[in-house]
Image (cartoon, rainbow, N blue to C red):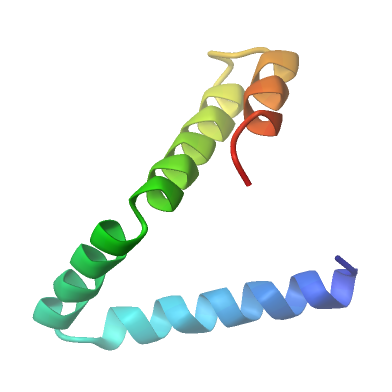
Length: 75
């Protein structure tokens, strides 16, 4: 992915997040419920990815361990 594509992706993600934040709580909760129900493995894998990344940043895992975990997660 090029730098321009990464920047565009980040802007799109940020825009969707800000849109999500403007929705009433009932709609946000309904969306999250559907997201978890319809994409459970993708959500779980992403949460695990974020946890591994955080553990590496906080020093609970070495850089090599964190990178190894991240590389072995499903795409």
